[in-house]
Length: 68
Image 1 (spheres, rainbow, N blue to C red):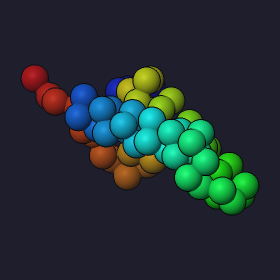
Image 2 (spheres, rainbow, N blue to C red):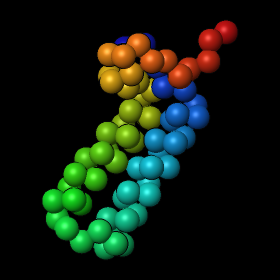
Image 3 (cartoon, rainbow, N blue to C red):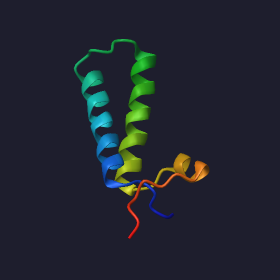
């Protein structure tokens, strides 16, 4: 797996994941189905930012890492 997620993209994904986790944890989102869907999205965002690889980016040929 070639890294295709840059530092800024990584930071944005982590912030989104944390915000979603906090919204669900504090009870701001009360619908169970919505909670599960958002938690899955947050988990995917967190994992892709930690491993620096996004499969959707590779499908579309997107690379946000800086080239030397």
